Image 1 (tube, one colour):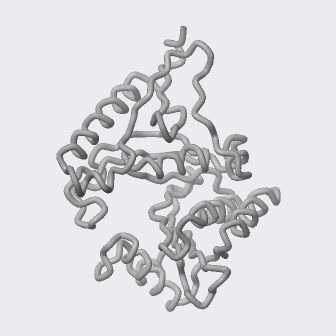
Image 2 (image 1 turned 180 degrees about the vertical axis):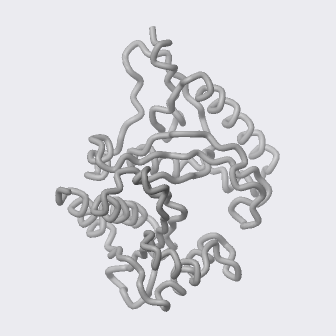
Length: 265
C-alpha cells in the first residue's frame, strides 16, 4: 500500500488540530463510551458501552478516538468504531462516529474517517460501509461529497423505533453508503477536493431536496418533519427500484438522481 492514505490523514489531522489513534486502555474506552453518550444525548445509556468497545478492540475491529492536539489532557473528543464484515467481503461496517463540541467546526470528523481509511487499507480492506439518516443534509454532503462515498441502498425504518433525543419520534430510515477506499474519486476527496454533484451532458437528471435543518424541524414542526421523511423515502426508493442511482449531493438542491444507464437519451 502506498503512503497516500496516511499522508491524507496526516494533512487532515494537522488542519483540524487533532490526533487520531486506536484506543487501547480501559480508561480511554470508558472515556469514549461517555463521549458517545453525550453526543447522542443519552449519558446514562451510551450507544456503545466501554465493555463492548473493549471486546471489539480485542477482536481487532476498529476502535479509535480523536484527541485535541491543543489540549491533549482533555481526553477523547471524537470516536469512530467499525467492525468487520464476512471474511470474503474484505469490508468493514463503520457503525458509529461523532465528535464533541470541543472541536466543532474544525473538521475533526474528516480526520477520523481518513484515519479509518488508512487503517483499513493497511489491512487489505478496500471497502467501508455505513448508514446515515438521508434527511440530515450536512451528513449527506459529508459522506457523498467530502468523502466520495456512494449510495448503495435505501433502508426504510432500518433500526425500528429509537429512543435517543436525536431520533425519537421518527422512522429510522437510513441510506447505506459504500466507500471504495482506493478509488480515484475517494483519493481525490481525501486530498481535499470534494466530489461535485454534476449532471452529465444530456442526462435526464432529477433532484431530491431535503430540509436544511431536520433536527430543528423535528422540534418545531414534527408533522412537517414526518412529511419530509415520507417524501424523500418515496422519491429515492422509486428511483433506486428502477435502476437509477444517486450520483452526488448538493447543499442547495439535494440528491442528484440519474436514471438507469440504458434510459439515458
